[in-house]
Length: 274
Image (cartoon, rainbow, N blue to C red; front, side, top):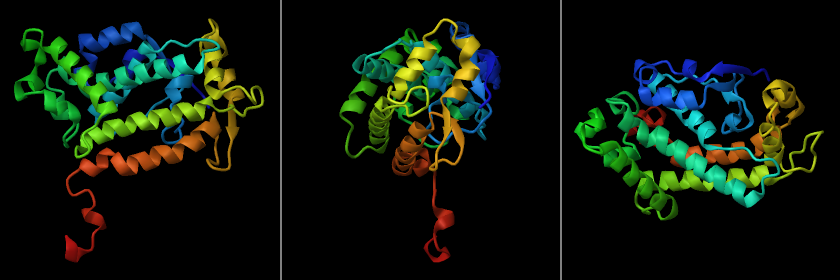
């Protein structure tokens, strides 16, 4: 896998994002990002080990939301050599929480008019935004701060106690369960030649916390790459990718956004039932 260190601001393409002072502040905090043009296995968290996938979305605004999510992960997570499992899972959980809130909620408060340019189906953040807020939350006194605090508190409640009859709350809670499955998989031995028994997450933490990691990064990625029969491709941490792939895809089938699209399965129904 080849990676390249690129300026973070170059990853955003829409004028709403490139002209946003809020995005500029994030890019100043995370000026460079390791990226790869290689397609990763579905659900493989390349940003964690320094290989963010250059994905292409049909909607460029959703693509910019993807980069917002990944950059927030980088900004909110600190690698620690010999990181114990319990504090590691807490740090990963908090980073994912902040990244999800930022890309799924806070973006709509900080970039005026963005909501009308992204998803056509309902999203959880809609419940907190009036039409006026959707157009420009900054016009309201403390609007962005107050709504952000409200969303954050509600998100924690939803993860722990989702309404059993609410799909969007169940979707969020499902993502939380999926994350814990990911933690358990990365707690297992890496299974690579240089670190057969060391937990996979510690292989990442030990490398990514080094002061000279950027100089060694390409060689390190090659050293942690292998081919598995499940994937049929050479990839960093391929065993972890293969094990999580099934969980990630099943999660998508049960709670993916495709289920919210109008008439999502019309094309699959017999004509008599349409």
